[in-house]
Amino acid sequence: MDKVRQVSVFSENKPGRIQKITGIFGEEGINILAISITSTNGFGIIKLLVDKCDLAYEKLKEHGFTVKLSEVLAIEMKDSPGGLHEVSQILSDKGINIENAYVYVVESRARAYLLVEVKDIEKAREILAGSNLNFFRHEDF
Amino acid sequence: MIWNKQAECMPAHELKSLQLERLRETVRLAGENVPHYKKQFADMKLKPSSITSLNDISKLPFTSKTDLRDGFPFGMFAVPQSDIVEIHTSSGTTGKPIVVGYTRSDIDLWGEVMARCLSMAGTTRDDIIQNGYGYGLFTGGLGVHYGAQKIGATVVPISAGNTKRQIEIMRDLGTTIITCTPSYALYLAESAEEEGLLPRKKIKLRAGCFGAEMWTEKMRDEIESRFKIMALNIYGLTELIGPGVANECEHKNGLHIFEDYFYPEVISPETLQTLPEGETGELVLTTLSRVGTPMIRFRTRDITSLHREPCKCGRTVVRMARITGRSDDMIKVRGVLIFPSQIERALLEIKDVEPQYQIVITRPHHLDELEVQVELSKKMFSDEIRHIEEFRRKIEDNIERTINLRVKVSLVEPKSLPRSEGKAKRVIDKREI
Ligand SMILES: [Zn+2]
Image (cartoon, rainbow over all chains, first blue to last red; front, top):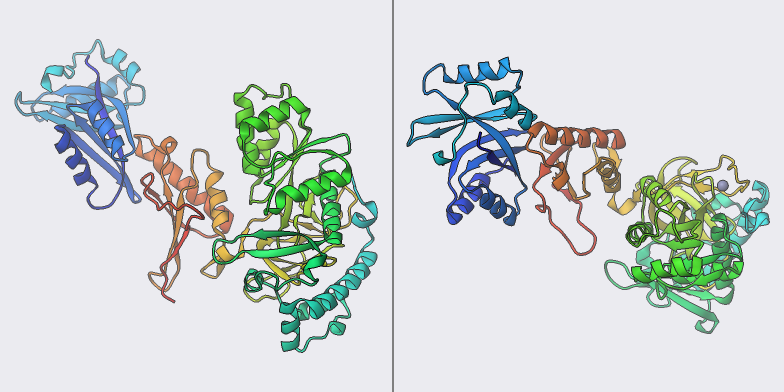
């Protein structure tokens, strides 16, 4: 099971924040693979799956953003209507609660991953080790 | 320990008659000799003889910092310069400094009240006082110095700054009493910890008088627990004399004002009416024995309240509550008076929140709205939005508890609020009234 990390960024809800991030990534040649935005009461957290995670973290910090790196589970989903259902069924059978999730589609390989945030990632990895789920492979970047 | 039992534990009626006698003398002296008061009393057709009771003090005009500035340099002096033995000035954020002068008897008075303050911290002639207040035009250093000498304690005039030296002196000379600003005391504690002197190795520190800036009970707890000492709050201001107007006794339930020398009133900063005892408002002080620069009803701008319930220490003089704000910073929102310092306190009570904030007042639909923008600190950040939201709610709730008004708290990005060199601009009033 390869480790997958996401970059989380604090942002006020005001115009231009995402452009600022994409602008920085453009200059540094960082590609965004998947993005999730949650917001409430005037602020939000932008979560990004990128190809150069450490570089993205450093550059955002340099530009004054409040950033954090954290790990997510990247579970392959079958490219069929029941794909998401199947994955979430297995997670709930194993007692793993999804804190937050978003999707990454690998276009060239016609594969999709469900990026899942859980409370205790080490434990979740252990529990899922014997399951018949497929996880992210680095060659998909 | 009570330095002057006769003065500090005087029965109320005796104190009142002493105050009246001294007030009348002060009004006479000021009216006859201080150019500023001479003109003002003449304009108001006020005769010193019209002061026949302490309540008559309300007939007298207030004195503001501006009056002192306008009188620069010697417009507030009641005696010829040859009778002045020392001068102090305090610079404001704007304009000319203010100048106060001390005769020999004023310096004596200063030493007396400072001896009372230091005695409250238990200081005797056997003590070594490390005086970390600045010596020079600032009154802190010399005020403590005169008090220490009056007691006969050993004073180390180290002045402010040079932390490494402070720590060495504390260890090598065996300092027992320290005087400095509370924020510097905390800084010293940090350095002492780094040097391995804390927790309590090789130091003999027992107590300290901390003041010259606004501070909180939380800071006191921290100073006391880190140094394992008694930390007392001292109050004073250059316009009146310097430090030594009031100090806490060991019971730490307000600062005893030395009423035989300083007459306190609390007024409403809005109506300027004197408030009943116990109510919160602006402290106004009148000097009762100052000769060089007597001060009548000086508006300190400090927000406090006065309390006369008996104190366990046996002193009969009034106590003032810890200062909670400045009347010049006061804002009125939906009829409620609010001080930015109250909001700051509410913020700091929450762990991991830093005091980087701004208050924005608007009136969108004929009703005032108060928004407090708080910068997210590193420690507040989490990649789970509900954790951050929890912080936001906690801040909202705590501010509401403190000022009795629901406000909107917005979290903003770190370092996004304007920074300034001097006093930060905390309040932005966008109301069009
Ligand atoms: Zn007392």
